[in-house]
Length: 381
Image (cartoon, rainbow, N blue to C red; front, side, top):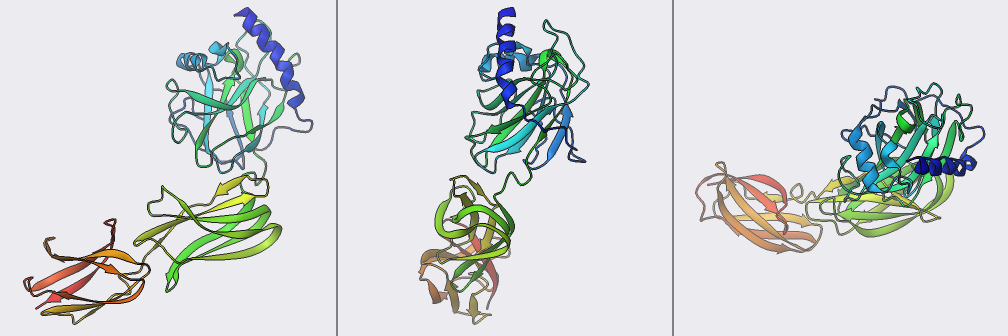
C-alpha cells in the first residue's frame, strides 16, 4: 500500500503542467440539484454550465468496484476511491472540454502524506448506451485526474483548477462524471464547461410538414462556427437511420440562416428526421428528432357515403406501396379487408361492400409494416 501511494504522489506532478493560470472558482448554475452519492439514480447535467457539489459519503462497495475495474487512471490503488459523487451527461459531440476545480475548506480525513483534495473520472459503462450501475459491469475511462488539491492546501500540488478534454465519445451515449474525496476527504468541487461548448451551431428551429412533393423540412441557425455541412437522416422507427441528403453549411457566421430540404420518398405513416451537423475538423452532433405524419387519410375522399354496393376512394399516395383497407365495425370487428398497391400520386380505388351488413364502419388504412395511417367513417346501407 505504501509503495503504491508513493507512486501516486509521484504521479501528481505529471498533472502540474495541466493547471491553468487564471482559472478560478466560478458562480455555479443556480437551482440545479446536487450530485448523487451513487451512480443510480444520478442527476443529468448539460455540458454548457457550471455545477458545484461536495464529495459524497463513504461507500465501501465503490472502492471494491473501482479496484477490480482497473480503469481509474490505470492506477492499481483504487482502494482509496470510496466517497464518490456523480453526475451524468449525454454526449452531443465527440469531445467535451471542461475545467475541474477543488474549492477551499476540505475536511481532511488523514493520511500519510498530509495532502487533501479530490479525484476525478469521466467514464461510462461497456453497454449499448453507456448506462450502468456502480458495482457491476466493466467501464471505460475517458479522462482521469488522480488528485487535485484546494487552494488552501499549501503543501499540495497541483492546486485549484485543471483543464481537461474527454475525447473519443459516441454522440447520444451517456457518460458519468465522478468526483471522489482523496483518501476520504470531504471537499467542495465544481466542473465548468466553456460557453457554447456543446454546439458549433445555435439551432433556433427544426420542423417538417407534408406537402404534394413529400415532406418539407426547414431549420434555422442563429449562428455557426466551422460548420461544414448538414446530413439529413430519416427513420421509420426513430432507431435505425439512413442518410437522405446533404446541405452545405455557412462555415462561421452570425445572424439567422435558413435551410430547407424535401424528402420526396417519406415512409408511409410517420417519418422521423434528425440533422447531423459536421464540422470542418470532422466533429459532429445530432439535432433533436422530429416526426412528420403522412397525410394520406386527410387527402382521401370517399363516395358515395352512405354507400350501398361500391365505395369509391380517391386518395393521393406519396410513394408506391402496398396498403390495406379494413372496414371495422363499432364493436371492433373487421368485416372486410382488402390489400392494394397504390402508385405515387392520385389513385382511384373501388371496393365492393355488398357483403358487409348495414351499419357504421371505420375505414382504416395501414401500410405494409402494419402502421395505422388513419381512419374515416363510412355509412353502409
